[in-house]
Length: 340
Image (cartoon, rainbow, N blue to C red; front, side, top):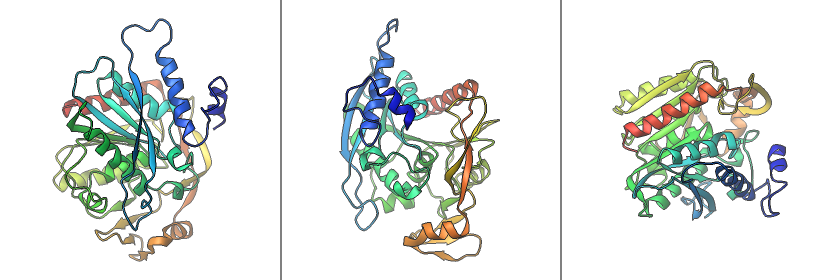
């Protein structure tokens, strides 16, 4: 996080690069960038939001964590307005990714609720250890964001979507599944659209029944962290199960986390790579190894993965401005096609 520390040097002491202060720092910097001299027309506004995660007893989301979030509002919005919950990737909230998408959505007339699942729990990243923030915890945070937006009359109750990259993309997919909604004890509320950017598709539910809300898989051709092929197969299964709103696009020449621009991709030798872990979850929550049909102990999934399939290292970043712009336009067009 040294890049963030350097950018925070001129900010108030409360704006720190670790924990919940990291989101505050990033958003202050974003707000400052939005008000630079010479900016024409009205600017978007950013509000602070706090709410309790969706608590599920007897799970690893049983504690009532107070979540911190930032709400990016369009300039001169027409009320009520559509909104999208943004859930972070394993790297946490980044300028080039989560804040970038929040700003782009707001410019397109869609409010964006950016949830700091990491900082709210006193951590900054799970790239090297996915136990620090699980997909289950992040999904329950997203559901809490949905409930918070749903209770605010400024937002269209039937036009609240969810977007995420990598781990956040997994959350975008998980929240569409009826079985996981039952696990999260959600019945009357649902997201109106799901945008999954470079999600992992190898550790998935056997059930493919969704709410029927449209889903957009945005995949990277050269992704060796969250490979495109399993997601293409997953998209076909969701469609075959009755969801006619599934869309897929594979971005040629792109690697994982293409939002970070660069002349070439970066190899991170220490990140946890689960692309070789092929696991199915039954409707009662049991985890089954597809390789040999054995059951994986619920509390011992990490040890099992370390012994059998978890590797270290993968390429990320090195995106081009052309790919990033095209992907952003595709995402916004998908939402607009679906009433946002």
